[in-house]
Amino acid sequence: MQLTAGNKVALVACSNGLPVDQQPEVQRLMQVLRGMGLCPVCSDYLYAGPTAFAGTAAQRAAALQQAYADSQIRAIFDISGGDMANQLLDLLDYRQIAASPKPFFGYSDLTVLLNALYTKTGAVSYLYQVKNLIWQSSAQQQPAFVASMFSGADDLFRVKWHFLRGERMSGTLLGGNLRCLLKLAGTPYIPDLTGKLLFIESLGGGVPQMVTYLSQLRQLGVFKHISGLLLGTFTYMQQHRQQPSMHQLVLQETQGCTFPIAYTSQVGHANTSRCLPIGGPYTVQLP
Image (cartoon, rainbow, N blue to C red):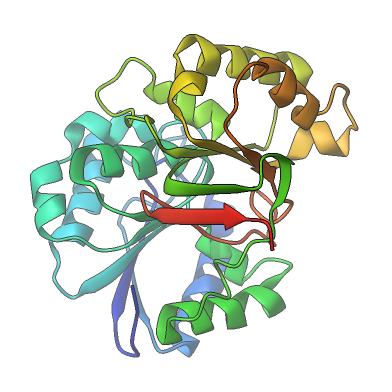
């Protein structure tokens, strides 16, 4: 995937609508993208009204569908998050999306869409919040974004991993935010994780919530089928120094399993976060 100067890119909000007071932030993001030579085009449904919705589910789905249908749009950046992206899953025309593939970027609640796109089309999407370009770590994010998106470098994708178990894993990478990924359980949009690498991270939730989520993964049979587990940041747990740690919980929950487990502090909800290719090939190994 590579962008060039003059390309149009779409800004959409498939999950919760943005507060209206974030309009200056979006304008700043558009300025940065224009400074890189891109031409950002905004969905009509970015901002929440009196409720949390930026338009109906059908309107938000249509805006995303139009971004895929427009041949001049070369990439789609979702700038929302929250809880409601799964409203769109059964309203999208996946055949049309597959016929006009283009990179889709989102994080957090957009985990549901990243993984559904893989399930329904085989597309590679990207776990990344483009607003990182204007947040606190913008001085590091902007050059990494430019190098990766325009020159094909791996700056934005380069992640340092450490192993809890094993020393190498390779396969198709799936997952994202743990709570949001589990919304797909029992739906036609959850990907087949057999032989895959699963990445998980979380913004909120303490030990009880993580135990619940890990137990659900085990009960779904996930730990019987994946070939590797990758852990990002677990912000609430780490900020509050909760015990047992997420690493300890994972090792407890996967006792008897042999798949490798690795972790990083470079992917999650922080504005320093790197980008992961959801649905793409991925390899992690000791140096």
